[in-house]
Image (cartoon, rainbow, N blue to C red):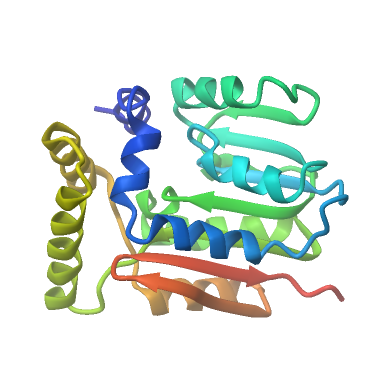
Length: 228
């Protein structure tokens, strides 16, 4: 099954599932919002890669209500959910059904965000994407990425998976959703280690790079493009 079809099939329950499946969801995205350096009246341009139903963009919009958004995702039904979510702001949201590995052009952004998406790419594709993100950011812009992290050893990778399964079951997620999530992980996940991801961001040109928050397999990455 193609990845767009696999995620289109989850639209009925996706938002509820993500809140249960992401370790430390509330803390993770609260901290992500703290990393947005712009004031509430700033009319910034935001690019959301792998936007899905628009969950991350909705949090950015709450922080920067005058922001303009471009949401990119390969799964059209997911983006249709985002269109419904943002139907009251048609002049501030644009949508692109496409594989963001092809994203480029001359348009520039103040903030690039992504959540739970880039880990689906092969390592060389992640590296190339980080370079393109650097190019589309304006000087002083930021890249904020919420994504999965591969354990640095097989033992730690197994621990991450075991803890995740225990937590998601305790969260009350339906067993059907859990099995579907595990099947998607096996089929589509291509996680990279924490150190590799930080190194690739630095190689792309970002000056200030860090994993601000980590909860087992989940990390919040910040990369800043120099203002000069």
